[in-house]
Image (cartoon, rainbow over all chains, first blue to last red; front, side, top):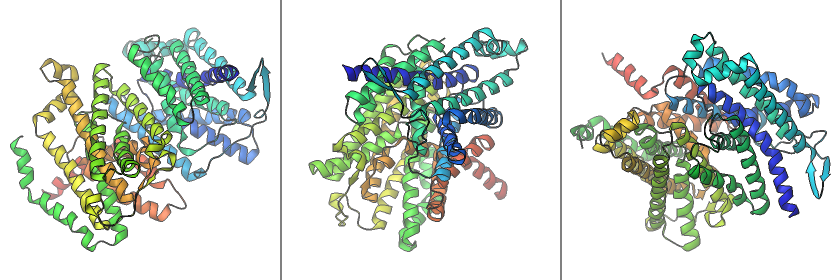
Length: 286
Length: 324
């Protein structure tokens, strides 16, 4: 029972961060219909940047996020403006293939720079534990959960209360009508893309303490993110957060109670079952 | 079959190219022969993938599953149950074909768009890799070492490198031939109709489900056959190479760089890039381990932006300009 509680809490906490990552991709999808197969690799990029900053200045991941966030925003901006924008609106297959190309580019770029061995970045809070009833929790997980929740709430406020948020929703509903109402669609899409990529810097630094890094890990994060996105109905804010918790929980329960690799299959199995009964996502789209 | 298909069969260029390729093992040094063999493997994969990815216009990311079944299952049947690898190759191909048909059925049943299809096939591929890694019967994380090649053809051993070259060439030519045959047969027209507009194709009486399942199953069987032969050639069925979704991405990149809408795109893409990649790996492998993949990725981005149709149509345009 203790083990179950432990697994549930752990999965719930990590699910919040997964949800945040998927929200970034969901925002991008909702304004420009792009699903990037390189999303997880950009998180790898952010994590490796934190590794470098730690190696050079002994900077804690929680501090270096203030550097990686603007860097990734810039990367996202450049990527959209120079590479994706010319292709957008043409064939959707092409964008899939293009982002698959980016996957190889990033994965192997990281491999060339950092080598293939596993890396870790210690953080000042990494080994600190706290007790909640009978369950032992690691502080980084709780920090990640709270930060992700706060950021998700901020995103929600931005979407519902600010002009920029209203522009995003307008472009989501009807890009042509939005353009006629004076919304600069290209600018909105570029900014949202930059924001979605920059959120990965935050998520990366939150997931970094205690994690081991390896250049090829991005693809698995991409798959997890995509599962959550589809579960959430692609552009349903609450649905995506819920999807994050479900994937996080099933992953934690699977790895705790099923031996080795078969536990890692649980999220996928659950995903397939849910999709069979609710093909439009947990709460439907929008 | 349209008469064009038999026209291609009569073309002297095709036969010259085949004979030229077939005599390569007689004079090529072993290092370059290995490169050429790898190129054939990937040409085969790229053509097999092209049946779904090019002709039907669906980016399938599940193909590492079929390669993995061909490589790991046939090897496991030999090592664990003593089943002859020729038989194992056929069993694996059958399993792959059925898996492909099931995936195509799921796609049809749930009306997946392009995007969801790519996502779900990627999820299938991830699960496939995890199953191989977690199941000792299929070799687990350490893979399966095949017995030393004694040159015994009856037990799927082709002797030296030339033997493997010829067998893999046979499979690559088979994949190419199947592509050309489909392109010029009713199935090819149905698939192109589906690629153009699935709903419209169905409205005019194309059996979408049957044709999609057929395309996916053929593609899966070809991948599986080549997978078995590739594992035997390497004498090591490595799950991190043969069952990894990265393999599919590599195949997709090669086919796309060559051009999926052209009959010779996969040949150009894989035939050109695999030897270049191998050379880069030979020279820089120890210093810059991922360089050749990095360059594939870069090339893909450049090709999609500058030559969206791929290299093969660009080459044929160049050729026509110079021959005029």
